[in-house]
Length: 333
Ligand SMILES: [Zn+2]
Ligand SMILES: [Zn+2]
Image 1: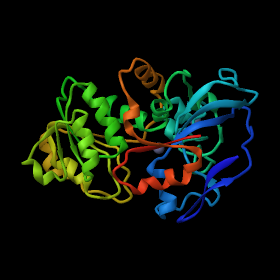
Image 2: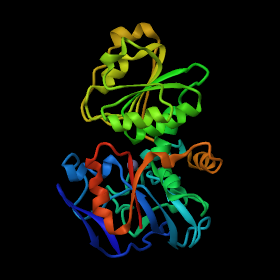
Image 3: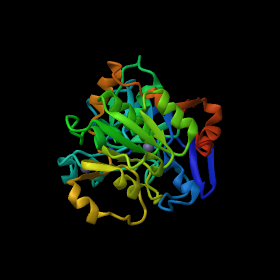
């Protein structure tokens, strides 16, 4: 089969490799119909993550059809269409018992990192019954492939944490796919949302889809304050500090961005403001809820997809991350 194989920093290849096989009785094999990319898929290539071994197949987001199941699999069968959740979990360890799936002692964020991932014609999914969700065949790939990561990340970290009786205004820092996913949920909840970003094409897209105002820096806002501030950038760019500046009295700060270094926390100022902070990784426990929202057309996740490529253009699709005007890129195999 063909797969997108990480060789070393600066080198990635759409290469011929061996098909995956069932190793454990709880495994399933999925014939991939389409996949999408995350920043995590670029970090090893960019030299920002040296934990991924050479010759690993990248990717943790995909939709496909089950082509093989292990002996212990009873609730899924060959031919079922599924979306793969980016968090693999065993449902058997103490972390899984508390729904802390991202820290599953036998799984977690392993696809495309310590295990071969989804950017391939076939992928082995460990603990398949717990780690995928069945998808109706009539739903568009561009909608359902967002279930793997970008939808549950925003839904579980923001929508599930916020009391919407108290939140009327929000700022999203970051104009990428996670910011957009968060935005689509917030406007559904009747929140007036401002976007802070650096890419005019994307900011225009937010505006056209119902953003109240867009800004390129917090200095433009004349000290505007919000009930909710969602930081979706990370990478030590000063965005956590900026988020604190935008927080109003009784405000809630949620940070989904991934940071490598410690950040400044202005406790001396915020103590008086009775704020709440939440941060964390997704646990992919909301997929049935999110699928129902796609089916009822309450949400339209294909809006997060900027471009779709075919199987002959996988490398072009991978390198499209260099175009900062795009949100998610999908490959249809
Ligand atoms: Zn992802
Ligand atoms: Zn577990």
